[in-house]
Image (cartoon, rainbow, N blue to C red; front, side):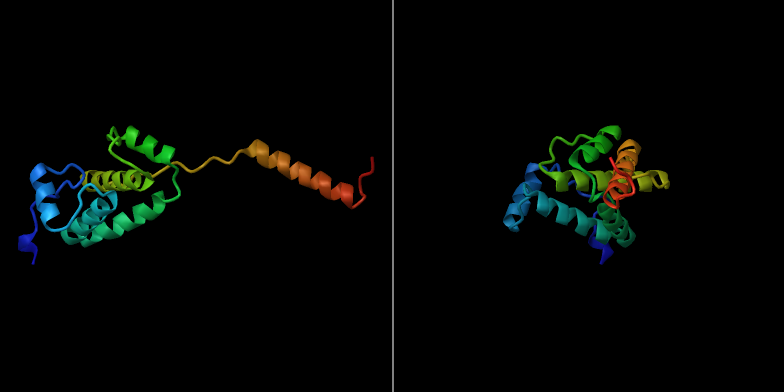
Length: 142
């Protein structure tokens, strides 16, 4: 029944005192980041099922990101992340921001820059391994 859904999303990360008290009566801890993440996912799924698919994909895409990369992406978007307690909180905040950007602009955004391969290290390692192979196969003698 979609008529019972709110017309706009509830911000579980910044609950009012009334929301906190109501949640406590129902046995829900709005201070727990895991609970907040679950509530956001449930809300997104009920409001827009396609959004949940995008959320899951973005979550998977950002899973390999370091905390520093997540913070950099949030700062780039001018999103306050100081309330986040761990990587999961940062990841959820970034994914929500990316989803909001997608809805607002209808343009897919790059998630994170790919890690650059250090070509000097790769070249050096390759040359060392070639030399090592030649030396122990006795093709090169000192």
